Image (cartoon, rainbow, N blue to C red; front, side, top):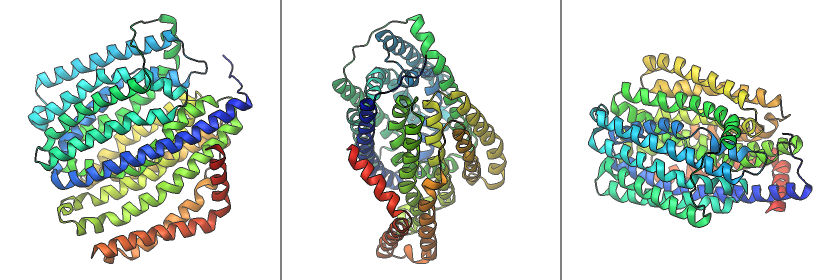
Length: 487
C-alpha cells in the first residue's frame, strides 16, 4: 500500500496535537518524576541495598516475561498507515489476553519450583506474584491506549500514568517508612494496576470483545513480529542480562548497581521517554512527508539535548557531595562511580533513541534490528570481561563504552532522512562541558554544607543557561516561536 499524502489541514492538526502532546507529557512526567524522586530519596533512606537488590531481580524477571505477553500488535496498530478496523482491535486484544494469562501461569510455575525463594525470600516471591497479576489487568488498557495514541489525544493518555504512579509511590513510601521493607512493593503494585485500569476505561471506554480474525492477524504480524524481535533483543541485552547479573552477583553488589542504574535513568525518563511517547505515533503519520519528518526529528533532538545534557552533568558532579551531606546516603558511596558512568551513557541514548524510534515509525524495522543485534552482542561480550576486572562497576563501564556505538544509529538514519545531528546539539554540549568544569572545580566545597551544595548547583545551572543562550540565542527563540504558534 502506498503512503497516504496528508492534506495541509491534516498536517497542521498533527503539528498542533503533537506540540500540545509534548507539553501534556512533559507536565505528566514532571509530576511522575517529582513523585518518583521524592520516593527514591525516602526509599534510599529506609530500604537497604539488599531490598533494592530483591526488587531489582523481581522486576528484571517480569520485564523479560513482558516480551512473551506481546507480539508487537500494539506497535503495529499504532504504526498502521490506514485506520485499524474493529476486527484489528478485537484480534489484538484477544491475542494479548491469551498471552497475559500464559505469563501469569508461567510465573506461578516459577514460584512453585521454589528456586527463586533462596535468592529473594518469601516477600520477594509475593512481589513477583503481584507483578504477574498485573499482566491480565494491563491487557484491558491496551486497546483504549492505542485508540488515544492514534488520535494523538495525548491530554487523556497522560492521566492514567499519573494516577498509577501517585497511588503506587504513596503506598510504597508509607509502608517503607513504617518498616514493611520489600513487601511494600506487593501492595503498591496491586493498587497501581487496578487504578490504571479504572482511569483508562473512564477516559476511553472500550468493551472487551473476543475474536481472532486471520486476515487482521496476518496483517498486524507483518510489522509486529519484526518489532517484537527488536524488543526481544533489547530484553536479552537488558533484562535477561541484568537477571543473570542478579544471580551471579552478591545481593548487596546487585543492589548498588540497581540503585545507580535507577537513579541515572531519571533524566532519560523525564526527557527522552517523554518525547518518544509522542513521536512514534506522530512520525508514523508523517511517513510520506520526509521534509516534515526531518524537521520533527531535529526539533526533538534539539530540545532533548537542551534539557538532558545539563541534568546528566549536574547529577554526575553533585551525587558524591550529596552522599556526604546526607548521613543515610553514605551507604551508597560505593555505587557513585557506576552512577556517573550510567548517567553519561544516557547522553548518547538521548540522541540514538529518537533516531531508532524514527526508523521504526517509517517501517525500517530491519535496520533497527541490525543495531539491536550489535548492542546485544557487545553487552554480552564486553560486560563479563569488565565485570571480572572491576567487579560490579564493570557493568557501568561497559554501558559507557558501548554507548559510543550509538553513532551508527545516526549514520543509518541519514540513509533515509537527511538529518543533521551536530547542528542540533553542539551548543548544548559546549555549555554542559563548561558547567561540568565549574562543578568539578568546586567539588571540595559542595559537600561541606547545604548552602554550598545548593549554591553550587544553582550557579552551575546559570552557567549552562548563559553559555547556551550566547551560543544558540537565535535558534532557541526561533524554536520557541514555532512552539507557541502550535499551542
